[in-house]
Image (cartoon, rainbow, N blue to C red; front, side, top):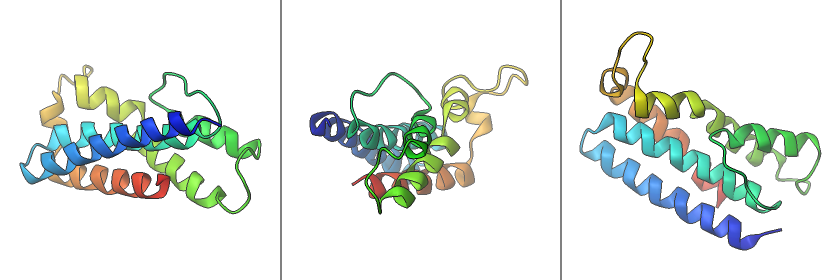
Amino acid sequence: MSNEEASYRLRLAEGFLGEARHNLQHQLWRSCVDNSQLAAENAAKAVLGLLGPVGRTHDPGAALLEALDKQRFTEGIEDPVRRIAQCARTLGPQVHLQSDYGDEATRRTPWEIFDQASADQALALAEEAVALAK
């Protein structure tokens, strides 16, 4: 177990969550989604960090689900870990790509894709993932 890894990832998650909140207040929808995605991703990586080193991935939810299947978590925390994985998967690689690059197939920029509703939803998922990871 690596409490140092988990602590580092949790600090990252909290930092990105703070930026996402700031972005929402200033109606920066794309930035809110982008930072919410990173907050949820790092919340999932914080939990993975309890099991060992965390690799580079924008889909740590999949790794969390795999660890759950292998019963690597202590009994009683499976449901919160599963929910963190779901939040991270919902805000996974596709959201990461769209918030940075847009949709190249339809030539829509990130600012055209994300609106207040998507920012609200992304922030809510990030808030939940970070709270559960703590």
